[in-house]
Length: 122
Image (cartoon, rainbow, N blue to C red; front, side):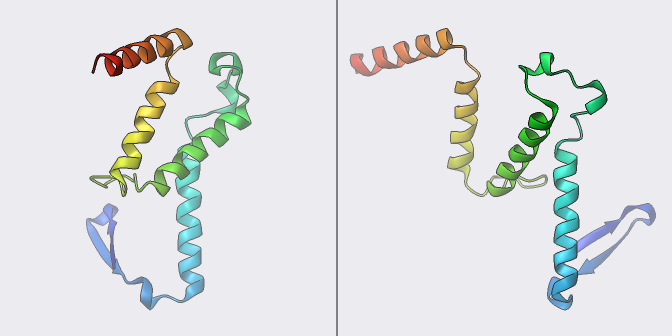
């Protein structure tokens, strides 16, 4: 059961997916996914896109990167309104991997050296 807000008039309706025919459910899911993925890349605007300001990434690749990131978020259960991801350990691992990937090679090597030293000292 889903409660859908009709914000314009401050009302809501309850929708029971079990009461809808399969074709209607497919339509609602396809419509919703289309909106979700279009929203994901809305910030990438062709008219003002400059590959030089985006590490040489083409406009098309930038759009697909945003779409792929949103798909990953959906698969991880990271959706608006959710308090915790479906798999918190996986989400934390992804956050840490993203932090590592943002490091320069020198920063990464320094971090690795500190980690190695701490393990040797222990």
